[in-house]
Length: 286
Image (cartoon, rainbow, N blue to C red; front, side, top):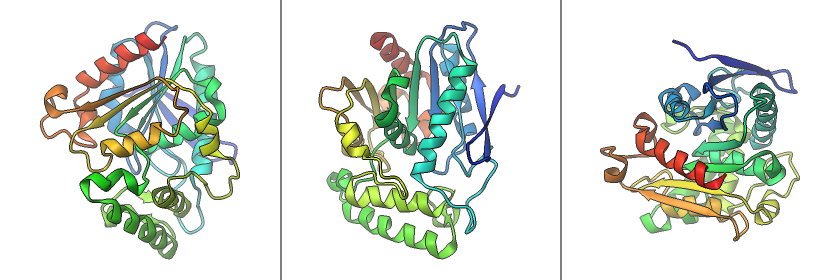
């Protein structure tokens, strides 16, 4: 059975369709789950339903340019982190209008999802009650020093944006990383990887300064052996927030999660442990 949906038209007239996994209790808290780079929202369907079964309204959404989004990156269609943050603001507004009786609104991000959500929180923290990061980190190359990959991150953060400029979009499926991505998304991604800062093209907001002044409740989950989001890189993201932020960081082994060969992606297909930890944290934080 297909999930109910919520259609949204962004301010630039592009559109998207959000998938809803509502709970029977209209006052249940909402969790908006945003994907990793190049991953469709449908990948998280089972995970979202498992969360809903445990007492949440859950919403999943594709990024601009992917899945149910009405546009696709090309030489003529470009966008970056600035537009993704703006899209998130419009999503939050639409979801709150839909679940008007809900008591609580949480953002959950996988990989890129947590970065964009953090950028949004730096502007509008009063809209959100907590942030859940799952295998979500900063791209900043220092997060890979312990596993000897810092130089690789610096190299790809220089090369991938150049490739996207040459082709007109980033050909992720050909390269084996991400999906069909917009040039400026890759420019902003690479800039973060090289500098550790957020400075989206066309956006003069001081995200780093604002995050440093933001005290916010965070649940972070990292996976042992995840070379796409190692523990230090996950720490780099939530350490952007004010040092007084209440952070719970779980560094999870395959045995704890009961997921053989646990990695950056397959946690979503084995939701039991993760759903339990999210529910426990939400209940404690409210």
